[in-house]
Image (cartoon, rainbow, N blue to C red; front, side, top):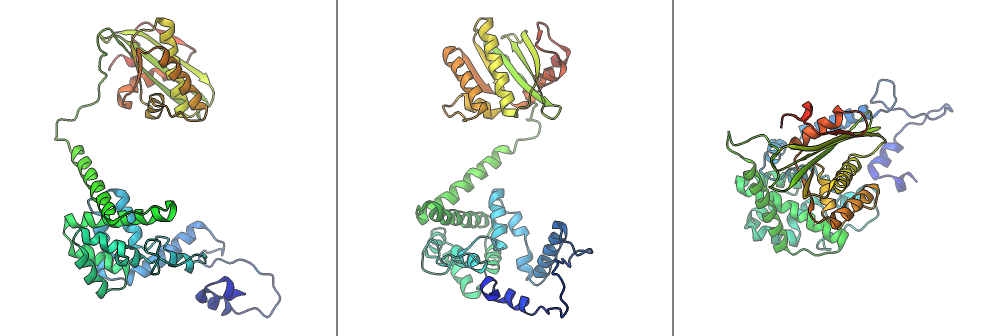
Length: 374
């Protein structure tokens, strides 16, 4: 029975346990803590000590984790590489060792047993990918010298330039995505598409990194901008406080000269999510302008979820979706209304107003001190 339930190593360990001669009730004992009681903390320390002992036996090449964490690739790819170097992926051979009943055949080629080494370096599709980026000779040479995925991975990084590092990492990530697509969606991804996806994702990420690098002195704090002539702008924002049991909001209408036309602050005793509160305040602002005379107004909110939902046909099927549908209905009737996103730093002055007047429906016909400075 024990051999049927456990692996050969675990079964041998269990069978070597000496049974007591006296008849005593069995109790659970955890020797990694002082009181013999299991805790997550003690289990974590034990796992870390095992990992440290295992890593102490590895080579210097395998311990150089900086080759992973300093790579110029997206963070999700660096995390992926760390998992690969730890052989943490649920390969079929690993699943079988853990008692999962499944075939050990490779998901991609359905010929050889699926291991980390096979999936990323030996499988025919993987070899075609490496050939397309002219790294197949390096891979083939390393396969003959090592049969360990971890050693091969770090040896590969040792031989590549910095630019090749990034491309090889993206190829490995794209190969894994291809494998999962076939497993869960049944879709085949040709090697050319795998390589193209890797290169394209890397190029997009590198472009965004260059775009982030602004020269010193060019960065400025976001400022509120005046609306176009003959139009108005309404900034709305809300605040949740007292453990989300009170919702306060503020809104502010300004004309093309930047002068305050109308402001309002209100609060209500009810619990809501941030998205629901933002949608409610937007609906209140639209209704208020309809009552006032339906001028051309651009409503600004710092909740991107609400702004995107209002401007698209896909509405969530919940309470927030009902509020957004009401906003869309009013916007369809009054075509001179629009809803746009504004950064939180610009909208922060309205949030201060929502917290400053804790009495129902406080209308402001003058500029309050809390939002005097824009």
